[in-house]
Image (cartoon, rainbow, N blue to C red; front, top):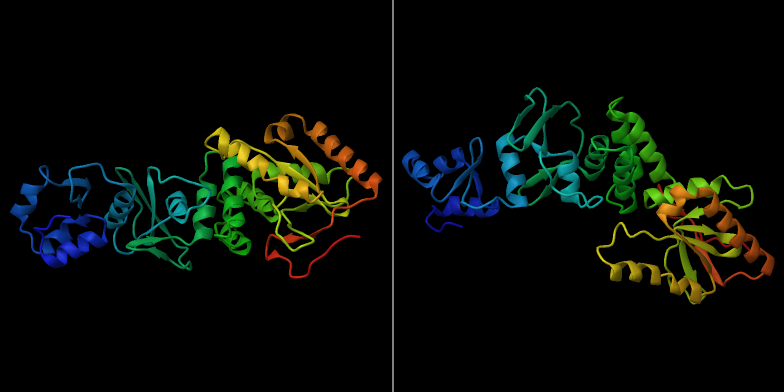
Amino acid sequence: MDPRLPAPLHELAVHQFGVLTRRQLLEGGLTPAQLRTRLGREWRLVLRGVVLLSDGVPSEQQRLMAALLFAGPRSWLAGSSAAAVHGIAGLPVSNPIQVLVPAPLRSRAHGWVLVRNTTLLDEPIYRRGPLRLSCPARAAVDAAAAAPSDEQARAVLVAAAQSRKARLSDLAHWTLVRGQAGSRRLHEGLAVAASGAWSVPEADLLRLLSSSTVLPAVWANPEVRASSGRRLTTPDVWIDDVALAVMVHSRQWHADGLAWESTVEQDTDLQTARVVVVGVTPHSIRSRPRWVRERVETAYLEARATGVRADVVATPRDPWLGVRPVTRRSS
């Protein structure tokens, strides 16, 4: 940061990631002539009335800060921008930066910022340093409503619930208060999240196996422990009476082959505990659903015919509450 700034202005600049408004600079002691001299030489005007105290490209934090300064002191980051700051679904901070202001302040767009007004003002505003942002549930719902596809919308809501960044009840609240805007895709996404699935492929697998006339009720992502009490890898789908785990292996979330292999090898602790493990892929669930269902049915019937169940304890997970407090095990 520029050490030539007056001390209070320097402190404010540090707090705001090196982004200040013209008004802050002038009220902080700079003269209009000094400001004009530095703009274009040492500093950049990144938005109307917002100055980056550098001639470089603004960082992610600086873009978010600049958007809030442009929108005014009653603004807060929203939608996919807020969801990205909360770390929901791996969303990036992308343009346009989404900002909300209370009505009757006006909506407007400028550069890479979109400011919308809202009458929904009962949410708690979160803070990340100088950044103000929507609560995780509203951010996820708004991001899902604006997602490019229904599948991406479902993925955002599932990720928000699975990561426990937002409660299902809060996601349902913000879906309802939005009214009809994007309600179909949001309700579908909520149904997937409420199934207990931790990804869209898992939800597709749950629906597929639930249609079976051979299989009993299946559980999504239960907590499984060995007889020693050691926690085992969480199965994507679980059939408790024979201790059968179905694992969805996807390369989508892994940057390289080593990460992919590491994920697959996590099944080893289940197999060591003599759990029956069936591995499937998202591609096979989509392209060969009947084959996937029959494969799991065959594994289930073969396991039941042995009359032997792995000595493990599985606890169902309530997606609205988490793991149920009472441990269950079918004999």
